[in-house]
Amino acid sequence: MTDSKQICFIGAGSMAEAILSGLLQHTDTKAEAITMINRQDKDRIETLQNRYGIISPENKEAAVRQADTVILATKPKDMDDALAQWGDQIQSGQRVISVAAGIPTPFIEERLSAHPPVVRAMPNTSSMVGASATALCPGRNAAEADLDEAIRIFSAIGTTVVVKEEEMDAVTGLSGSGPAYIYYLVEAMEQAGVNEGLSPAVARNLTLQTMAGAARMLLETGEEPSELRRRVTSPGGTTMAGLNTLEKHRFQEALIDAVHQARRRSQELGNAFPSPTPR
Ligand SMILES: NC(=O)C1=CN([C@@H]2O[C@H](COP(=O)(O)OP(=O)(O)OC[C@H]3O[C@@H](n4cnc5c(N)ncnc54)[C@H](O)[C@@H]3O)[C@@H](O)[C@H]2O)C=CC1
Ligand SMILES: O=C(O)[C@@H]1CCC=N1
Image (cartoon, rainbow, N blue to C red; front, side, top):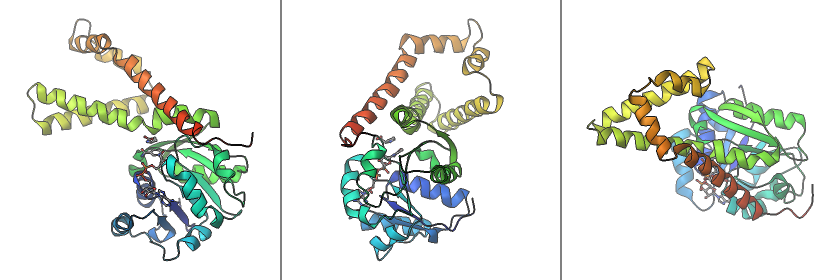
């Protein structure tokens, strides 16, 4: 992605940093093309300036006004205030991308008097290493070119899919929150290795490569996970003993419920921000 387009992040937390880092490492985007605005927290912007060389704008209003794309990356609960604070700076010729969980596009559209195009995105923090799984959906003022531009940004830092807005809560529960489930699994596998007498370093090394290898097998062979699992599982062997235990503890049911509860929570966050105008 060759780019001189200006991007302004409103909200400079974990997700904004993951996108920023991914863009700088995996595209031709220059740090000078990125501005970041954060509430109160001057230290945070200084950290990001030192880490990435991005600009902390003197005139924050102008930075929002001058961006080609404004990325809204505050917590859902802060979005209303952030739109009240910065929304009047956003012009119709700009493009807005929101990465906030749960917040429907009409909620944002109704708070932007210039009616710019809004695209909703749900990336994940693997953006940082160019490996996000991002789902996108266009708001009512977004033309194909706006969606394409958002796809272009997020394709540079991972894979993208376009979904219907009503699918965004499910996406959030699955791939938005998903990295945390995987890290949780890694924590458990490492602990298991240590419990069985391995050093923490060896347990980590083996766990991570096992995880990475299994992911690559899935991606590169295109085989079904159930088939790949079958090939590891010799009848009466060790894997079967392990899998039977996972089944006894209802491991799959627990994961399915985790995604369901995360989806439900995303929906709940959205319900807290109703949109008065029916679409
Ligand atoms: N962390 C994750 O894995 C993912 C997060 N998201 C979404 O990204 C958004 C941000 O999440 P995180 O980065 O984790 O949160 P965070 O709390 O790390 O960052 C949010 C930042 O927004 C700033 N902020 C709040 N109000 C502001 C205002 N009025 N003007 C300027 N800055 C303001 C805060 O100071 C904070 O630094 C959330 O809406 C979340 O749902 C989406 C996908 C994954
Ligand atoms: O936990 C959260 O609410 C955010 C949204 C998806 C991942 N993290």
